Length: 128
Length: 443
View 1 (cartoon, each protein chain N blue to C red):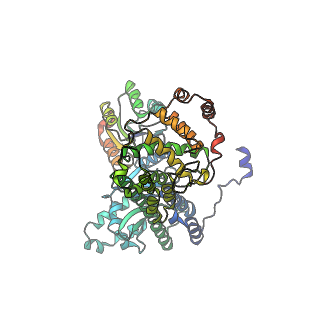
View 2 (view 1 turned 60 degrees about the horizontal axis):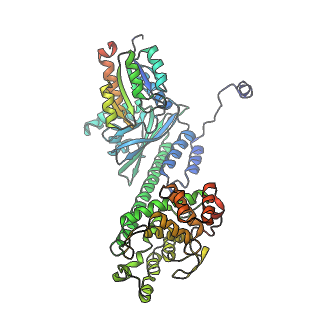
View 3 (view 1 turned 90 degrees about the horizontal axis):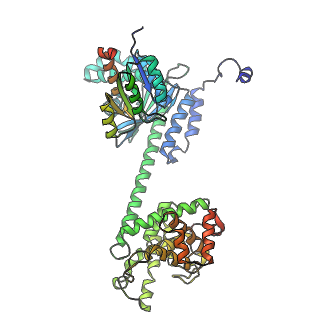
């Protein structure tokens, strides 16, 4: 199965990473995770994921900075923010730099499922 | 690590699976007195932990209704990583199949306990006849089944309050040993879920009653505004701020202090002049000095005020503060002329806080208030006379820390040895010799 869609989950809560990993692996995705922005950059470089699920408030470089650094070198893949941070300004800023969706914790999992599935179906997600 | 391996058997720790009656007993023991735990968060953590551990489930979680978000939030979870849904990570909306199913009490179709197992749904889906009667039920069941698989849940157990209000849902993952849940287990988990939501309901109720209580106290205090020109909302805010800081300080220096809820103490300071409602207005508003007769009347207000609170069971301590807030440390105060440590500590604190605020704000008899420096000086001069000397020190410390007073102010307004002493005891910032001497309980 060489053409599985690759999902990168970035969250400093390990349980979140494990849960999302297992949930989407069961749906047929290839899932990687990173526990920090720094780890995410390394994983991105190596694996070039098709979809990014990213937390904002993390120790070290935060989600916003992580996205900026990715964008310096690559095209940003479809990116979904999952964060407890409910701040309209921040959301606007993230949308401006190319984040497609923002889910506020606690999230409705069906929304995350639907977003990921719709990105996976769109052929462009693979091409970027 | 290597050593440990040698000593331990090679197989994974062969934990014995408890029989239902065994784990039921230990769960019952663990949850005994649960209803009395008012800390709802701790309570639900305990329940979920015990369920996973004693029934040996892969994972479990508890969804609780959140009034503000109008949805069910996974408030607690536990179990094997990957399968366990991180707590506070997800919520479930009221239109999702799980909530709809239990809100409409559809669980009753399947099981007398109201709970639902995955296998119940499967066998139910084979019976076509029932679906003809209830339109939409099949879709609901299919949706629920999909969610159970998605969440890796073997059973859902609803927690109702007064049979109708769905307050919570217990998620039960599969058992580690792969066995199915038996009817008696479902009954037990249903009882547990009911106990859990009842306890949470109690905790919420307690909180809301507490809120009402302090609301009533505050309204009573604000009613003083109507007859006492000295009592205003800003006065209340200032006393609240300085009182909080003073208590924090006393709390740090003396263990277990105060021994009454902080809010209740601060409220009693607000209320100490409530007896003035019986004092004629012309006395309260008089600009010049009072006559002996007028003083006699004014001096009744602590007892009049205390009598209001003596009627209320549980507020005896508030009554004491109100009754004795005009006592002086040297025994020259009223109504009883109590001296030193015989005056309840709360009343001694109230005296310092209220005198300072009275001095630094306009009064009918003194249009131009004292400066903070001047008022601090008066407090210091009043040590051992009107005020408890240790409490004056603590209060001056608060003034210094709040930047309302500087060390040079202090030296300037009171340039003798005793200030040097005070200064030293403040700088040393230890518990100091003073506070250890505060005798008696808080009241």
